[in-house]
Length: 295
Image (tube, rainbow, N blue to C red; front, side, top):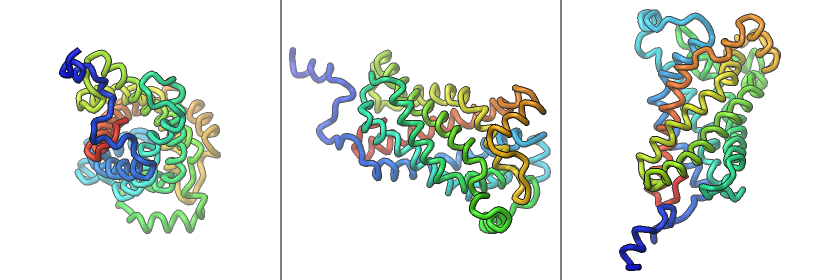
C-alpha cells in the first residue's frame, strides 16, 4: 500500500504530530470555564422563560409588557458565577474522569461514560448550588430586581449558609442524570456518527449532530429533577414550603398530577438542546485549538 493510501486510511482518532493528547484536569476545567461563560449569554433567556413556566402561570407577552426585554437576562450575574463553578467542573471534569476509568475509546462501555459524567456533574453541583439558588430566585422574580449581593445578604440573614444549599439533593440528582446522559450520549453518538459518515471527531458537523442528539435525550431524563429543583430553590427566603426532594415530589404529584414533572418540557428542550450544542461544540473547538484531543 502506498504512503498516500495509508494516510487516507489512518484513524481519525490518531494523534497528529502536534497533538498533545488529553489535557490535564486543570487545563480541561479552564477551557470548560471559558466555554460556559460564552454559551450562557445566549441560552439564559430560554432558561428564564423555562423557570417562569415551572413556578406558576406565565405569559410571555405580559412579561415583555411589564418588565421589558431585559427581563430575559434577569439573574445573569448569578448565572455567570454558577457557570464558572458548576459547569467548569461538570464539563471540564468529564474527560479526565473518563480517561482515568479507561473509557476514552469509542467502544468503551456506555455505563463507564455515564458514570464519569454523573460524577463530574454531581461534584460540580455542590460548588454551583449557592449561585443556582440565587439565579433561580432572580429569574422567577417578576417585580423589581434585587441586586445579587443584597439577595445573598438577605438569604444569609434569614437562613444562614443552609439557605444557599436548599434543593441540594434535587440538584445533585439532576446533575447526576443530566451530565451522565449528556456526556455519555455525546461521546457515544460521536463514535456512531464518525463511523457512519466518515467524519473526524473534530469535524464540526460530527460535533453538532452529536450534541443535538445528546440534548434531546438529556431533556427526557432530567425534566422531573429540573422541575423539583426549581420549586425547591424558588421558596421564599423566610419560608419553607417543601421538606426536601421527596416531599416536593409527593406534594407536586398530589396537587398537580404526574404531568407536572414535565411542565415546561419544550422550553427545557429549547434551552438544553442549544446549550448542550454550544457548550460541547465550543469546548471541542477550544480543545482542538489548543492541540488537545477532543471529547
